[in-house]
Every structure is written in C-alpha cells, then in structure tokens.
Amino acid sequence: MTDRGLDAEGFIRREGSPSRVQPQFAELVADYVAGCRGSLGDRLDGVYLYGSIPRGAARVAVSDLDGQVLFTSDPTDDDLLALRDLERRLAAAHPVVSGVEILAHRHSDLTTPEQRHDGGFHLRVLCTPFWGTDRGAEVPRHRPDIDLARGVQGNWRAALERFRSRAAEPGADARALTRSIGRRLTRMAFTWVMPTWGGWTSDPAVMAGAVAQVEPGWSVPMAEAVELGWEGRADLASALRVLDDWGGRLTEAGEALGA
Image 1 (cartoon, rainbow, N blue to C red):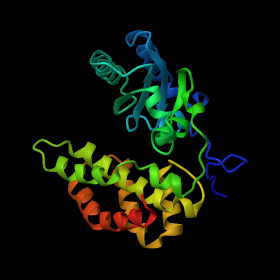
Image 2: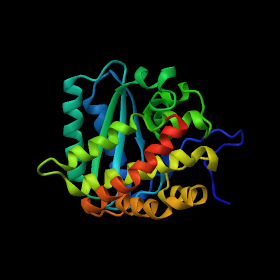
Image 3: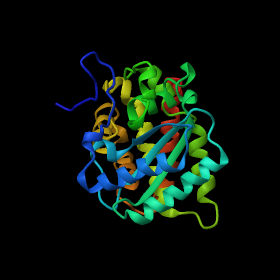
Image 4: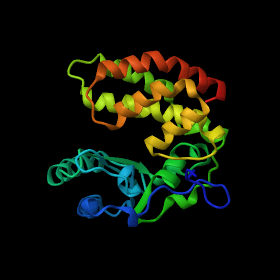
C-alpha cells in the first residue's frame, strides 16, 4: 500500500530528517550549516533544508540543495548578499548538486495563523531543521483537506503568468524555466486531487499515481510535467505547450476548490 505521508492520527508527517541525508551529500550539508552560522550573525534563528536532500531522495549532479534560513528580524540586504555568496561558494565546492538556493525569512512571518497552510506548511512539513529552534513545531498540524489545498499553492495564478513573461525575456534560462514550469504544474495538479486522494507526498512518481487515480484524464500531461520538472530537459517549447494546453484545466479545477 502506498505511504500517504500521514501519522497514526491522520496528520501530515514532516517529510525529512537529518538521518535520511545520503552519504554523498553529507559534506555539503555540513558546509551549508557551518556557512550559515559563520556568515549570518547572532540574529540567525534556524537553518533548514527542504526538497530531496532531507528526504533521502537526492540524485548526484541532478538535485539541488534547497535551503531555508530564519532570522529573529527581517533579513537585511547584507544578510541576502551573504547568502548569495554562500550559494556560489557551495555550488562551486560541491558539484554533487546542480545548484544551491537558500530562502530567508523572519521566523514570525511563517508562523502566523494566516500563513498556516502556505508558509507554515512549508516550515512544519516540507522543511527539516538542521540547526536552531524548530519553528515548525509552532505551526498547528495539517490534514490533507480542502483548506490545505486552497492555501498551499499560494498565489498560483500569478506564478503561471510569471512563467509566460519570463519565457519572453531575452536570454531566459531554458533549463531552469522548463524545470520550474514542470514542477509547478505537477504540484498544482497533485494539490487539487490531494483531498480526495487523502494524503501528502513530494515524490513525483507518487504524485503522478495519485493524479492518475483521481483524475485519469490528466495522466498524460501529468507524466510530461513530471519529466520536464525532474529529468533535466531544457525543452522550454514543450513546457510552454503543456502550460498552455493544461493550465486552463488546472485553473478551472483550482477555482472549483476555492483556491
């Protein structure tokens, strides 16, 4: 039976754990944590990872390091410059990943009641703490219900429009944009079926299976979105075609949910 990511009480479990980091990525993770602690000062509240590395599903030279740092106050321009420098240094020193991206927020911005199903879910379920206070514990637990489906995709309409405008820019990074479009469409489709499926996952294969089970008519574009999002293709034309062909149906489904 497929693991639906729930605990014994039916709440969504945190996806990752430091114990799941594969040996190939251990040095990178240690350098990431040390780099954050060494360059961000005493306002640093916590250092987290999300994505495939803390889930133990990372692929060498394919996966990224996805970081999240929290501060006790708003990140300053100097904080952000230090993070951009750390991203560059980690990427250069550790070709085991294809890239490094570190998000930064004030911890209280993600733990408000208004953020429970968006930033709060990101922090409680998707992020794994590697140093500092676990602010995810301050967010109420989540069930795979319609309230989560309505909130977890944030401003998804604006995100779809940004893809189109970014694609029209001269010198657009085709590989990065292809991946972003594929992953966003995959996650949107899964989110819309999630209350019916009755669980949570970030595994693209499991997401595809859930969508095929609940919305069989979405199976073909879902499979293509997964390939575009996770297999490293720089096929922006195909990504835009899937966005145009499938985006309308996903928009209708999201609006029907009240998202």
